[in-house]
Image (tube, rainbow, N blue to C red):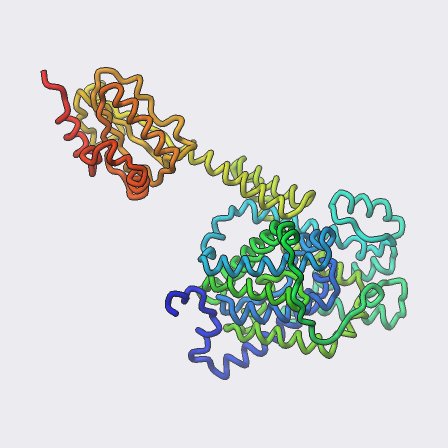
Length: 554
């Protein structure tokens, strides 16, 4: 059991010493978070192209398991804005059954990632990619709300961004003024309500006010949820998705994107909440919990879920300190789903559009994007802008894949740029030895030449490795490798070519201060036997002594 402690849920850890006072705090926090999650879950479901109740299914089922089995004390799981664009695209291409399979597969992927301890590797995804696709998602969310916000009379909204904007422009003359005014009112309430109260979410107030206005005013031209959707109250139905090899193969890429995006967002939320409570989450346990949550969400008719930063922060601010608060949040939403769901049909669509516009604005990170454009190196700016553009005009799958490949190539380029080889300068060749930056100049034997390698020795740097042909009158070549932390197979081949050239010229190759990883690569490749164990020296002084012993006798 100790071997699996890295995936042990925080719930079982927090049960030790759990008090009645903390339960009351968790209970209050869970109920407040449920009130916040209610309008968001409905709005995000509709924006994703599914029925309103499916957003609540997700918050209830996935939210419960994410808290119960996750690695964070205070994480709140459920549908988030980051998935809206990708869910909408999957449904447009594969239908709801395709989304269910993709979510199911993503859950399995995340569970496997947790067991393989991939939790710590997510942090290596460059911030330029996360900032780029986050802003791109926000733009996509806001663009998707224009029809309902303005009350445009048009058919279904195209999934592609360019076609979507073109369709809006073509139908803008059908704008409905009462609908627009309701949307603007909902927007203004969300902007200014925090000045009145931080406890009660502005989105809930906007729903109550606009629903009352439309209902009491009998304004039939303003479309409500009930005009467009049939809302089902009651428990979700357990359904096993139909899997086929061809469908699994087609959905492998979208499922992987869901898994990566859910992992990034949930672990980012966990890190933020750690800072708020002074805690320490278990990243791999969190991945397992998120995986089970998404798997169960798919089985109960939900959509992809992850840790929600805003709802998690609200949980912390209201006293939640254990996973019990997240489980209470899920159970509270279940009660709302059972008894209050029919009233959701009265909510104006333009109000939900206004809520999602605010969600898109708050998640966009446009200030961070702008700061990166001003201060980041050109290569990082290229990754940032390309990821953003691909997210908006193509889809998130392409954006993440291309962004990661481009970031990897740029990283290799930078590593190649900083990797260099310097030839040692002999003391006697300096007019003034005091001008040297080296305080510990060594006496190099007349028969030897010394090169020092700086940086990782890999294929990007191998082409500029050594030029032994220029050396004449020497029978020993020393390569000092103390500043080589890592080496790949191409670096190994460069050393082997260097050894061949040295041997053809009658030179002995000596390596100084070989670090553990390069030594392991050399040993595995059989290079130690080729060069001779006696020519692998512990430090440069030993290498120089070895070189002097090989000087030709007169």
